[in-house]
Length: 573
Image (cartoon, rainbow, N blue to C red):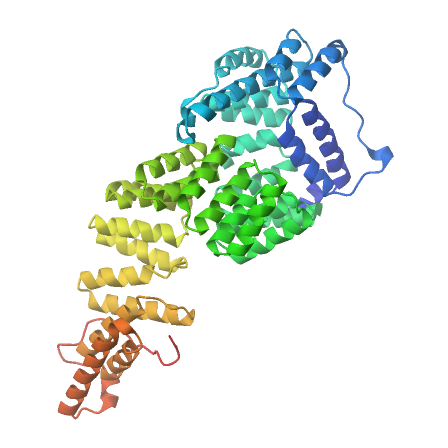
């Protein structure tokens, strides 16, 4: 039923193609290059239209004719980034298109001056302190027009951007929603709105137009809010509806898999994307993150060299090179390239977070904290920055701060075992053992990535002299490790404990088995041999048949809650 409804919504792909062609033209005329690029890529994924089906040109008003010469010359200056010059020639123009370009030129002029002022005088960590001086004037002028109802979809979008830059977030959300209603096909407005949505409740509360582009927005939002299952379903529906050739959708699915750490799937999609679009630079920083995690040095080196050949001074290229140097443990060089990325774009979220990681590697905690805080300023939903802050304060031995930041990371990634284990460690340091136990068990339940939750839980039970629970956790831990075919440094610790536990409870067969397995590990070999000797001595002294060892014991040494004997025979460490 859901699929049928979606297909009917996307039923007329010809109509969608016409709308995309129209909005591409409108965005190009106004210098909105990223929105134009997004719509162009989407239009390219659909079948071409015959000549007689192409959409007509937008209506040309008397004001447009009056401003045509000024608009043409101003647009040529605008394209050459001579924004003040463009704004000067657009003064007094009456048409809506000219008014938008006039205001947009002034806004970009202020942004350019702000960036020029910061590049040489300050490092990227201080960039947030410099303001665009044109913002307040623009707000006053646009506010008057807005109250009079004279702003079209594009100018409403610009008004929203100005409000966001002035940190008037509530007002900017309202204006972006208004801009989307006025012009639903402008992707830039949807994207700006997505940066301001902080949770699913806020997303549901927004009054959005019922248009096909809303599905792209919802899929994007689900990815941002870490609702990956829903995002993947949305993107699959869009592919089924006719957008199967869209490189944008493939890249977004790859990013979604990256977010849930399905690294192999994400790598396969990025490789497919590189085959379809070999000169693409968008999202290649995410691709390099995956190569970094997998320690694929040759592939990361090739990607870095390839991107340098395409465009040396792109943010993504600098991030890829930074990851390459980081993988080679050249952290100073890595930090330098992340700083370059931030000089090119101070709102580059990934570069702030990665630079924080590099400062952590260099033991520069104050710079790491500053970098992570900037990442959170750019996007409060970046769980990596919150987690990084938690780790930094952990190094500084400030557990209350750790707890606060790990909680924030956990709220953003409730099913990520790493956040839960970190939370558990913080609670443990604050002597809140009950909360720590809950966190460790929850980490195991959601699928422990690093296989540490059960081990930490077992050690906590051991400290609290809860021997039955400790043995149960150690047993689950060993079975988990062996069933995955992994080697883990702490297996010997678990075997040592279980050997002693079974020995105390007179389960000598199980104790003997654990002791024998201890002998396979250098750090536990001597203890394993000692335990085997003890078992041998006890057996020599008693004539108890081994079959009775498995019967329930009735004496006072029997623990209240029995742990089932550990079957290690079927597992090979």
